[in-house]
Length: 626
Image (tube, rainbow, N blue to C red; front, side, top):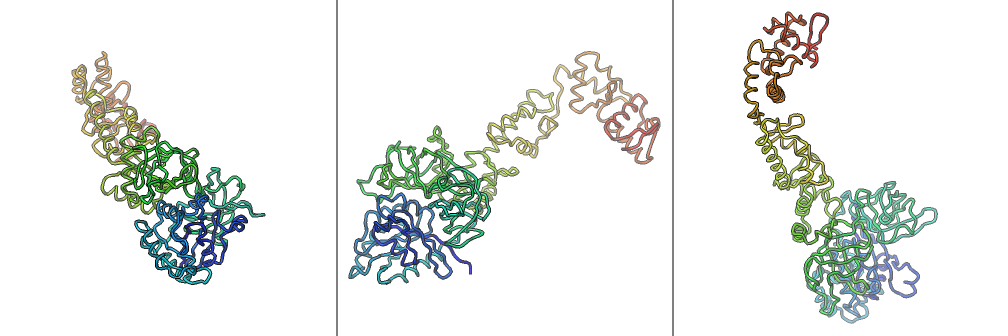
């Protein structure tokens, strides 16, 4: 049976027994720092793992003290379920509430409530009802509340059963080819080097693979992998993973760094987000105002940023607002990620946020098109089709293999969404590109109109120069060279490309008025069985211009400097020569003159042109097909 993996994080007020419960469940003491031992409380993140008959549960134990909420946030950024711990003797406390709000902001919806220290009260019924009341209107409103005691062992088996049930309900972690690990611990092992740990999400990592650590933004090689103290050749998503990094010192990789593949290691300093303030916040809660310096928590790291609201001056409790976060240093963050906003003094959690776009623009933040994109994504936060459609509306065209990559959406989701957009004709595929159908069609229409206008303005020309169309494609799809794809689409829809010109299929170049008489004279003369020499038509400028026009238009063929022929006569004579040579193998010029029923003055230049064109070869006095 395939082992199922999941990550569990504890949450709750200080001294409610989180670490003791983790130790009672797993046999591992998560308090690893000497100061934690001395003070009897968790300061930093602790880690353990629990085997539950075919289920492997990685446990992140977080601190409950208000001073260390930033460490708590770092521990719950990539978890599958929460273990909310409430002591039976104390009940619901301030940090219990703040931790619950943080879990809600991060989208954690699965959880169990452990009512610890149940042996210290006579009856837990009242406390269970109090907790149930506190959980109302939260993602954990229907969570199991399990009274237990780590001192007596009562309730531990019930908790393990509940956790096993939850693990079975969690969808398996798929390899989405987007591996990412947010670093929560860094240490050095003698003889091995720098080791970082975190929860691996989005894909697998392999021993020997080249990855990027940001910061410092450098490539490094995975020298070794461990998961739950076991060496691994391949680390699976949804597991606690330790990575031995080659060539990076411990000081080079801070907590909060992201380990991922080079093509996924995009960084940004401007985020467009939807911020949410919990309706559970009390009336006296710290306000969240426009143009405020805040701390943005993402993954296991946090950093300073300036908060700019798209509308209004303050976000009240229970409100959602569009905002832009202008980070003071770039971070590796993806569309669809969730963040936590805390005040600069780190005394209060202010809001949670959904990252709508990592390509924020200070100047266009409130532009109608920008607001429309962001509002569409807010209305459909998990609908990949909407996110792709808005990206195409913004960018016009995107390489198919880079659409929403990286992001919180899986490649399978993206592929299905693209297919739906293509079928509904909201998007169009051009080679490796996916284009917004509206913009593509308007560009094709504009190019068509430009060609048609040229036909009206200069009917004597074979078409519009391709060089004149090129700027239109750059204007429609800046930064992407799609000229050949657009021209190919035009040619599938009523246009022809003729060398360096493009024209309507129906377009026939027409002689300009001042050349019409001379052109008609040339046409009639070339219909005679023995047409005159070229010099007959070029005695004056008008005749030379008219002849050149007819040559360019394909009505007349330039056989030699002294001879031109009407296109019909030229191609008929050439065909007769080829047929005669196929039948007889070879022939003299005299024999071919007779075969074409023409004069020597015409057949000799004709044969010489066929030699130049690679159709025939002269061998002594005879010619053969090449």
